[in-house]
Image (cartoon, rainbow, N blue to C red; front, side, top):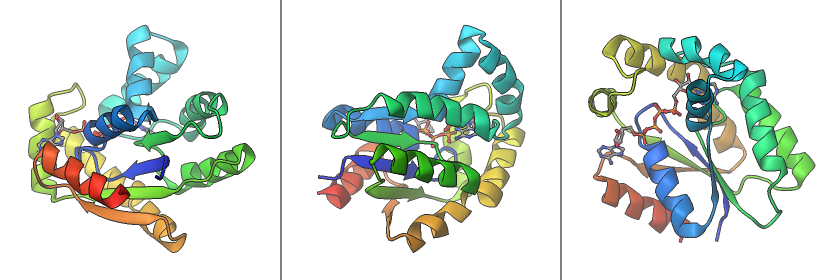
Length: 184
Ligand code: B4P
C-alpha cells in the first residue's frame, strides 16, 4: 500500500477533510501547511505574525517559511512511517525544494492525488465553512492564485508518472470511497 502521498487541488476541494480521514485510517502523519500556519497565527509567534496578513488576503505565504515548517516535521519521520502532505507544495519552487528534501531523506512521493471540481461548488463550500479567509472576494483571489501558481504542478507530477485524479464532487463518504478505491 502506498504510504507517501500528496493531495493536490483548489481551495475547498476537500483536501483537508479527506487527508485527515485517510491519515487517521492508515496511521500516516498528516501534514497540512494551512493548519500549521493557522496554529502559528493562533500562537502569535513571529512566523504567525508574518503569515497572518498574507493568508487573510488569500495569497501564498513565503516559500522559505513554509519549507522550514515542512522540513522540520519530515526530518523526524522514520523511513517506513508514511505521510500525507495536504496543501503543500503550492508552486513549482516548493515542489522542487520538496523533491530535494525527499531525496535527502530517501523517501520519494508514491502518489499525488488530484482533487478537482467546479468553481461554483468550491465557492459554496468555502462560504459555508466560514473561516476568516473565506469571504467571496478572498476566495476568488485564492482561486486565481491556484490557477496561476499551483495548477502547473498537475503537469509537473503527471510528467513524473505520479498523478492520479479523483472525482471530488460527491459527498464526503463518496469522495473517501473514490480515494480508497484508487489506493487499493
Ligand atoms: P489550506 O488550509 O490549505 O485550505 P484550503 O485549500 O482552503 O482548503 P481544503 O481544500 O483543504 O478544503 P477543506 O477540506 O477544508 O490553505 C489556506 C491558506 O494557507 C492559503 O490560502 C495560503 O495563504 C496558506 N498556505 C497553506 N499552505 C501553503 C503553502 N504550501 N505555501 C504558501 N501558503 C500556504 O474543505 C472545505 C470545506 O468544504 C469544508 O467546510 C468542508 O467541510 C467542506 N467539504 C469538504 N468535502 C466536502 C464534500 N465532499 N461535500 C460537501 N462539503 C465538503
